[in-house]
Image 1 (tube, one colour):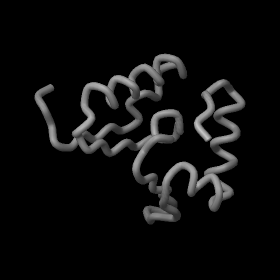
Image 2: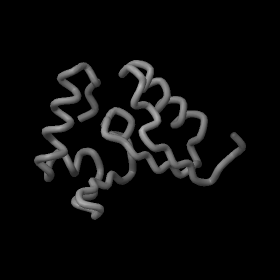
Image 3: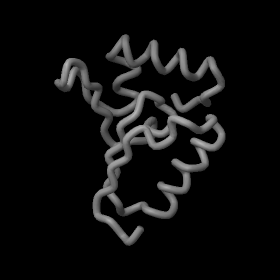
Length: 93
């Protein structure tokens, strides 16, 4: 891979365990800090540090904000985060 301006990742870590997933996201942050990353995922581990999180429902944006914003304002996001972190997905609140 060369030096992209934008990198689109669609369920890039879905087949990895949570420790490997954390290492992958850390590498993206450290090795590609100036690359815009669009991450499509159902696992929240890699997106809690995102500048902006969009929740899609029915092909539309249902909610948007930072991880902290969504924890405070979106029940669906909060429940998903709590479910995933109880399974050992880490803490980022």
